[in-house]
Image 1 (cartoon, rainbow, N blue to C red):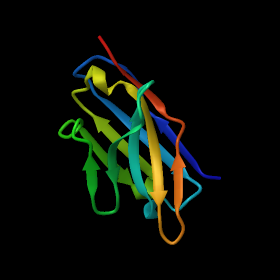
Image 2 (cartoon, rainbow, N blue to C red):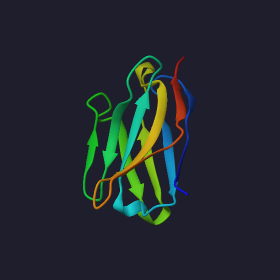
Image 3 (cartoon, rainbow, N blue to C red):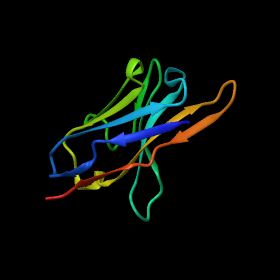
Length: 117
């Protein structure tokens, strides 16, 4: 059974930090590209950061503040979020994707991040 379980969300003041974790099970973690997405009510889900075996990518809005990483031995992906802003408030989702030889696309349930004073 495939599972992606996010944790680490919460309420933080502007300028603060949080570290999100996504623990994966039920598939070969190292073969999958992993990503963090976020969605605010009334808005489309947007890509925050992505990581493969040899590259990382970030949305322009989080470059220099967020860092994505993964530990294949622990089947876990992380998102270190620093200098958080109110506009970072959203539900953050973990995604796992592979396209070859068969396409799979898995999602977690999400973790709420609220940045407010």
